[in-house]
Image (spheres, helix red, strand yellow):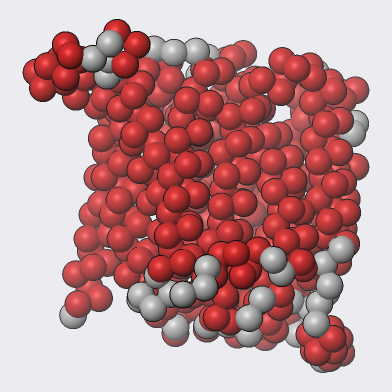
Amino acid sequence: MKNRILQTLVIRRFLFLLIAEVFSQIAINTYTFSLLIVVFAAAKSNTAVSGAVLAFMIPTLLFGILAGVYVDRWNKKNVLFYSNILRGLALIPLAFFHSSLLFVYFITFLVSTVTQFFIPAETPIIPLLVKKKLLLSANALFGVGVYSSIFLAYALSGPLIIIFGKSNIFIFLSVCFLIAGFFASLIKYKEEDLKKSKTSESIEYDFMKELKMALGLVSKTKKIYHAIFSMSLAQVLILTVAVIGPGYATHILKIKVEDFPLLFVTPAIAGLALGAIIIGNYFHKHDKTNLTKFGLLMVGICLMFLPYGSKVESRAFVHAINYYLPHMLTINILHIMVVLAFALGFAMAFVFIPANTILQEETSDEIRGKIYGVSNSFVGAISILPVLVVGGLADVIGVKSVITGLGITVILIALIRFISDRK
């Protein structure tokens, strides 16, 4: 059997998309996580961190569906190019006015608004660049690129602030966006896809009609709304963990906030990469909906055990193992956290990659952007309350209780999905 991952990777137009995506995701997520670190360091409060996340989430709720409708009528390559350039230019003033909190939140809102148009173009463009038989492998590679970039940005946000300083970090991120725009400009469509796109643009525009069409397709197609639900839930969990991550590092792991991203993110990236390679090469014939349910179940289990590394560390069998190990190799709470982070990344691959592939297989190019717009808005809608509440809840009942509750909730959702689909 040919290696489908390698077959996909040698497609130049897809490779340009992947490189553009990596630079874009590193830029936007380093910006996000840098703000989280700065806010938590200043306020020492999970509640304050929630405010920074909301600056990104509100435009998702306001403009997600609208952006999806418009992007379906535009050339998606141009959307990727201009959205990266605009975000790059928007960050430059922060190098001079980053001390003004109101200005920082204004730019954050602006950048997030532009990002709403970027999202319905990034993944929906993939079916225009690769053949259908390679879609799962393309999404596996794309997933590794996107989520590794997110985790990498999380890991590097602290060190980059130290290296570049509070002013030059924004110049660095602006350059990353501009590089992403350059590679997006190199993407070439097939001639027939360009003709189809131009034909679509000539059709009379009716916003409400197109929106109803997208919502109707989501509500009537079981595979689509299950995929959107799974992706949305996973993204909300990532945002939630980002909010309480600093508190988890401080109160449970007893390490510096700046050290947490690197220690947690590196194994998560490795797990995600392994999961993507396995899915991309060996799971083409498996039911993708079942893969997403399996992924959610694994995510829930990992989250539920994440706060209890100290209890495992105190077990007699761990002490027995440590007795025979050199001091440098003794098992402690950090080692247990690393294993769980690896498993969490592996599980996330089983959610995002099959779910994205389902959305691409079940939709046409004329409606795909709207479907992703609906998904993006759904994430924004269901994220507002958790992001608002989870920080304050962690301050009141503790980070351990919040993470445990999240894990149990996700496990129950996955089990309900398994049971309901059997009926």
